[in-house]
Length: 131
Image 1 (cartoon, helix red, strand yellow):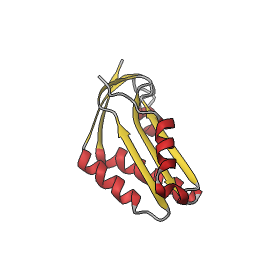
Image 2 (cartoon, rainbow, N blue to C red):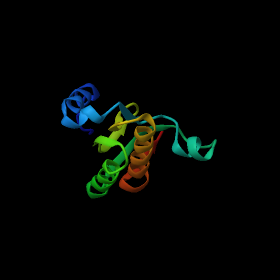
Image 3 (tube, rainbow, N blue to C red):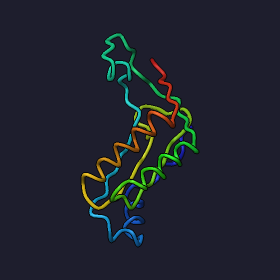
């Protein structure tokens, strides 16, 4: 059972209505989804990895909050918003949404890579369900 996915369009409207929006020259979004190709195949080239039919996904909210706070403190970053799904997810289901707003492209791109990396490497537990 997955959670209701928020609207990125709504998130952008809300971000642009905040006082800090005057400092933002760029917003960048990440939408992670469950894919059929196993992580072992994509990351390690394991040709014998079975196709994925779903994923069990959970996260540590305190760690996510810390990663968000750290990202907000990066140079030129004025907006950070994260949504994470949970439970048993199927192919094509949304895993996470991240929206970053900042002054210039290099700051925003770096902040998005930083935050998604921290979330994926330190804050979540993912277990692929194979066919």
